[in-house]
Length: 359
Ligand code: TXA
Ligand code: MG
Image (tube, rainbow, N blue to C red; front, side):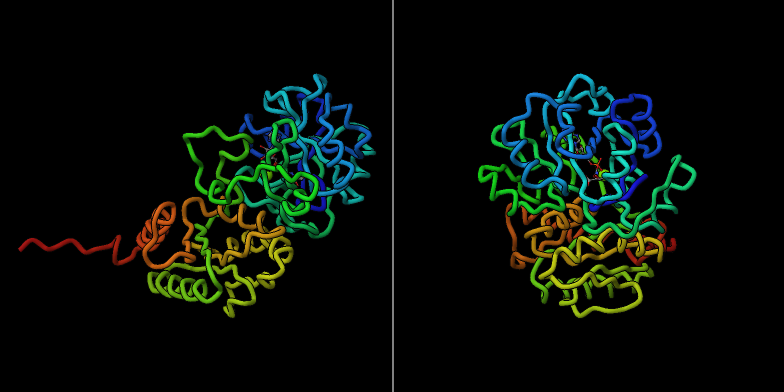
């Protein structure tokens, strides 16, 4: 377990199948979800990858060390368990000096997924990390709070055109300056898993980043979002639910179960606090967490991707008018469903209707 500039990682020797199996076990991670291999610097690339496309080298040169992961053709030396049987390998060079020193001391490439238990929000603070993993791993190497707060950007440079597999700490705008033909899937594709099309990156098919509480994400202007958040909070509170809020300063909302993650104009601040705040609201015992969406620009794209995955199909889109069509209709139905379904065990007038007495 070690800190990186994005989130904490749970690492082992990437070239040792037994050690890598230990990672899957400790995290409870499905074995068909491959790991990222961490290197000390780009000079070590030939140890884990081969036939590296020129674009891969250009991106490594431009953005390493840093929050960018490249999917490259795998070297046969890397065991199958590390890449979940794929013939490609995901590689990155972290920028946090501690992490690089650790890799250097180990003398081997380090396979490391985010350190959280599978499906849970990633770990970005030592306190949460100790609570979640004490006793489950051999060594906890604690740094401070992760500087970026969301995971690395994953780009497949083997495909043509190259594909953004996961938005992350390195913004798409910066990537596009070097990769103008980068394929970026619409954010909507990162909501509830789509069973019809097989995911390009195995990790994309699982529900991710989810706190214990239900998450409902609101997308729209600050005014509309504030109104919708307040309405839903009022309704849930009346029904006896504990409600947590994750909002920006612009919402004007405050209170004990409200976490304010800076301004809409500063997605970096939102990313920095995101996973920590989700876990805090869980710890307060929230049944449902209502989240104000932010613009999907810069790191905001990664933030919105994580929130959509945490929310599953519970996204309330307020950008469209009261009558919506196409995808929006599905969203409008979700918002009705969101209103109708109370959390487990909570009695509401809808779930707890007294039986009619026989006359
Ligand atoms: O910032 C990060 O990337 C952190 C820190 C610890 O470095 N690590 C991280 O790892 O987020 P993880 O395992 O949580 O996410 C790795 C993602 C998954 O979505 C996985 O499916 C994808 O990368 N991935 C790994 N190898 C791949 C491959 N060969 N092809 C496509 N996707 C791959
Ligand atoms: Mg992860």
